[in-house]
Image 1 (cartoon, rainbow, N blue to C red):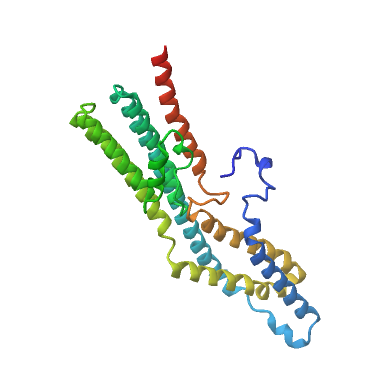
Image 2: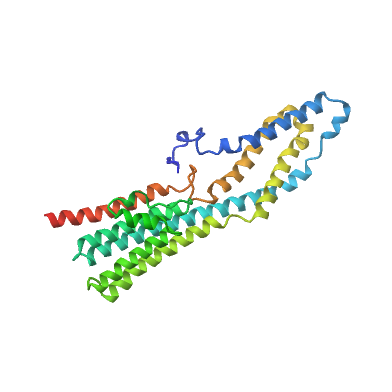
Length: 298
């Protein structure tokens, strides 16, 4: 995700990275080149090409409808983006709560408490990589048994395997008398919530915008932009070229924004900063274990 100050226009007004210019350059160039060809034929071609000009009424009527389609596309994509961010905010909170309870309730077995906290951190990395079709718990593997990490990463659903590992550790703690039934239920609710957040992210990722809607919008958008020079040529002449450039840039840019943020879990520059979120979780949870060790040492 691009970090910027929304109060300073000059800090990002002319930025190329993240502004989607590269993504839409090809489509816009096609429309601009076509508009130049249309104007050249209209001005310098045989009299037959004078018939290229069409009335502007159709574009004036279609424009508002096309705008509504684009706004709906962008709004629905942003809803998915914001929903994804809320789910990851929930993961941050639940991992902290789980680690807080483990640190307190398993204080009699500090090694077990640290192990639970490390696997809790691993869940976040496993979820991030699951959303990117990868099987890894990232830097969270540090401090965990290599054989257990390898077995977890070979599972079909790594976040689920991590949650099962956490459940097994907690049930073992109950059998040893380190947790009572109420404490076990409370901490198990945190694990359930983590699974729910992971499932919600998977739902967002696996359910793109309906194919028919996307196809129709793109066809209408291309048809509108390619016929636009025909509607402008009689009144604008060679000014049709820059006008087509501006209008096609705006329309294709709006559509591309919807595409860019529709799946907020990938590695594109406008996606959610999942690496940063996971590293924050890992740093916070390591801070819990480090603080406890300092207290014990003191």
